[in-house]
Length: 418
Ligand SMILES: [Zn+2]
Image (cartoon, rainbow, N blue to C red; front, side, top):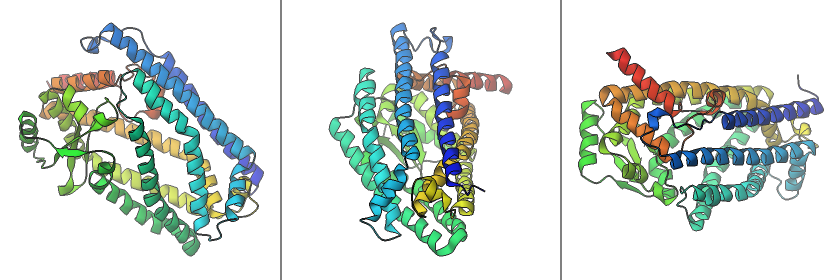
């Protein structure tokens, strides 16, 4: 199966085009599904001007996404049509001879080229669109420093992983998949355990939450639900954006709660405890463990399928190369696998949205439904979230249910309990 390079190339072009069409259709549906009236659930949080702004913001972001998506699609399509990846391979082979390092150079060149192509778009998004709607707090210096740090971190993590994969494929043949799977699983756990300790501090400052009303309230709530928290941190999210968030990270004793400074500024103590209760709900309902199992299972599936097809020499020829190269085959595989990963992404989102409802309910039962609802409403208004996303768009892309659905679910659950 799939021995003819031109058939493989045709299949890839169809897949890439179908993916682009799907995204574009969903974006259009989303723009069309907006409504002019302010929903009664959030009417006390929105004045007319601000609601008007949220419509404009979502429209502009979607249109901009369409533009960047189109440019990316055209670039990929042309590269595939004209054997551009084969040319990059030939070019690199003039300078690099090691079979281990050719793939590193190959993916490095592709990564840097695509980043240069998208840089003007990233810049415009931050300093024009976000700026216009009052979200941007980032300076040009921070923007470029982030880029440099991102590059270094990407190289530090990405290069050893790629080298190991290439090495195992060369050494073990199709058996590479389960050894690499074990390594990948350990890596996923490691990153999660040390994310706030090792990675976040490279980009942000974390400070322990000061003693006071909020800390006392959080500690007493978490003790009540049998989930004592020692590490509560505030992150300077305001360095980049006025948008707010909160997250939990780490495992076992290392776990930390991280609250954005912007979140603390705009919410009452009760609302902040509700946000925290929601996060604890994820732990208590075992969502964290389920999330790990799901992502490790997905990685295993992908590696297994990869091990069955990755030695097909036609994969390299399909991209315009003269001969077999494992890096070219990896790229072909990634492109051919993308429909499967889209389907898996939809399933993950489905599960994630279910978990969000459960965490909201946990917060409502163990704390206060009103506080949970108000926190969600404020978050949505402050971030100018889309209140009427199209159901098809939500189905494919949303890891969290839209605001009005969450509010309705909290109310229904309250009725069920009484
Ligand atoms: Zn959640």
